[in-house]
Length: 549
Image (cartoon, rainbow, N blue to C red; front, side, top):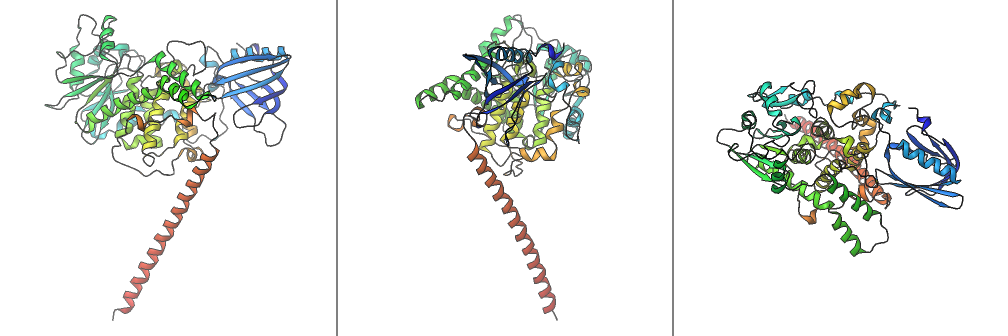
């Protein structure tokens, strides 16, 4: 298919653009295969380059011969284009609709994008499982890297290499895979160096109504326990949902077969409930006419902060089991690709200082989201404005980033990255020139040959010129476990995401710059103090030498 077939009118003059925080600007609108571009001949006017893949929905209005297209973006921006001529307006609208809903992944922009910057580091090879396993040097006696899934034959949503207990061979793993949803047998997610306890994750066990069991599965998860120790299974579904799953062939671990494990059920919502929550929240944030009571009731009705609280509470529970109880845990829901990953990755943010650095956080996303099989292509297909809702769309990753922001806000000096880093990740998960978030799992990314045909997001982010934008000036390495408050009073709406197109951040940006300047000035003064102290010590030494007979 040629893009030209979808572009009915490639160019229109005298189009007026309205967008947040800029005055209206008149210019020429051009449509390419991947971008909507508006350029003006006016001096000092920034061009608009908008990826078609960032467009969530469009509305059309007509007043006489003038047409208006309202473009609603996946990053929650709303842009208005006033186009002279009804036919041109209809042509532009239908072209945008066709170009923003391309079925084939290989027609998306990452396959056509060529970087204008020098590639210093190949991001595709920055966080390989082998490199991550080397960091667990203390665990090598009890764990091993298995390539049982080398051809994605055992589990289509797992990477080729996974970390499993040494006591369990590959043949046993194949049997366990037939007993777990989607073949997702228990694998190592995190090793707590302080006491050797671990977080494992998996899909639900396929016990069904007859209480089917799997001896190899019992052996696998028991291999993580120390003598005389108990473990915890954190099921992210309420008990009644887990019980209902048995009728469909799913289920949960029976106490009789897992006597050393205590099962805890939590209630983290999934799919359409989360999507509806996001839609309600964005709708209420965009309503500028409401009074205080209405705003607060709509914020409450969206349930967004309730979801944040549930996820953070479960992550804190997981971290407590490891750090305070000295117990290993297994986390799963139904598939093990959504709420499971929210919990395992947030528990690591709480427990592991490395996860709070820029590269450590990138490694976490690579390991616990991309390689762990979170279906980004499905979950991030649409955002808060799209009318044609599919059942698999859900802001699971955005909720995770929001939870990280809540912890960052409570511990502003413990993270090497700033809020802009999290916002950037949200934007690229939904629309990007990079191939990192394409596909639903490693198997799909392999078939698409993303490593050969697209650029990794990490190749761009980890360049010094970009890193400076994402570095937190307040960062001081903190090797302690950080325990966030999950009390309702401690959780706030993430204005940097949900209100950034409704309210100018000009004064906040100025305050941030002033803070950076103060910190830099403080460092300079500290360096001067250290120099003067050294000079004083040298003078005192010289005086002492001269006075001695």
